[in-house]
Length: 405
Image (cartoon, rainbow, N blue to C red; front, side):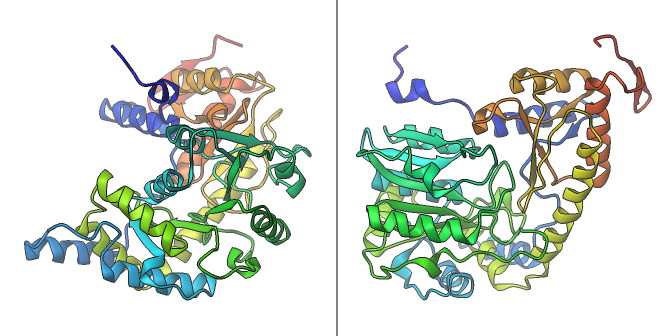
């Protein structure tokens, strides 16, 4: 069988694979704890459900414009005005099948083969694969100081004549690190000076802790004309717990959006009109659901950190936002894939290995579940790894005896 060169280089999404494994095990009735998901458990806003149902009941479920229905564009324009203090026009906006597609179409619109795209590590698992799908080269960069917080000099050191774009995801998946205002200001100025595209993946920007406020990257842009190479990515999946609705968007200069629209038109013809109607209702509706989710995540994060800090040998750094703790388990196994499979086999806890995020020896642990999931999951992990734990553990009515330490 003949497979394309690009196709041969693309790895499966480890996060989606873990979700698939979880669904299979749950269907079998296994007492699984899923600490690997990036999916809130809170209910979708009722306004979104009502709007989607009303449109379905109308029977008028037809093609929509490739770049989004006018009502959704209007909502995104208002959202951009509120959170970025930037008044854009419909031609600056494209709605896509999730923030992932918005980012993918943006990369397809700007990248040529051999171009390079820089992003801090740890990074979302899809960044390298999406860049490779464009025939370009991903260039991850680990902060030199060993933290999850990059400095401008970290980015500068890996730039080359092939550099085309920088991706910044803050708060970050998987670390939960929220980059400083100083760093955001510096990276905006740097990309403008060098002529690079700057892609701000702001999907978690409202889900931040400890009284922090979202940082507006547009505050630091000097060229506010249609020549700006700033691309802002967002969507409804995270802040509104609407992961399955697959509605995201990009805001950028009009020429770029036009090219993205053309690409998307040939890919998918644009997102479902029913799901766009739901997104409009969520964005325009009462926003207490976002704050409720944020508070739940902040509380869950505190509980998980307390559990991890009591775990000998594990190094955990307090997240500033998002859904995750990215903890260093290398004292137990430097191979994070082996470790994640071991925990799944021995105690039926799903975690996500750190290797696909660019940092082996770590596990991404989700705070999206219940407090019971978090405490029970960490208890099982501790029992499986810590030789000082009791030798027996009950999972439901099943008694486990540890025979590997």
